[in-house]
Image 1 (tube, rainbow, N blue to C red):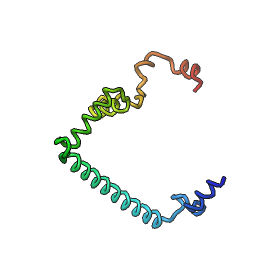
Image 2 (cartoon, one colour):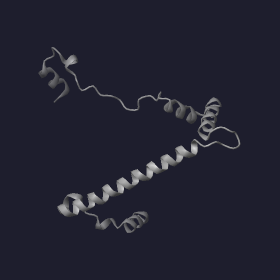
Image 3 (cartoon, one colour):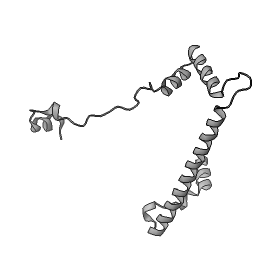
Image 4 (cartoon, rainbow, N blue to C red):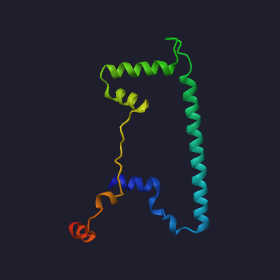
Length: 126
């Protein structure tokens, strides 16, 4: 309970209002602020990605290879030694990642062809 009170004080959650209770101008202002913050976050991620790409393409003075090459070799060596995480990362990177989600086929006409809808309703209690 003490942690909940700390959180409430930290974020002042008692003063939160549902978005749909705000006036149109308040909603517009909040949406504008959110859009600006989202744009800034995207730009920051882009800058970070560009910086990483630049550093990874630089030459490692110790090995005379690029850093991305050295990292790749290191990852392969770990996978060979039995690191499951390294193996998964390599597999996923080369596009061999298994599908995480199940796909639902909502088109049941082929299975239901010729069946009486009343039998289906009775059996499945619709």
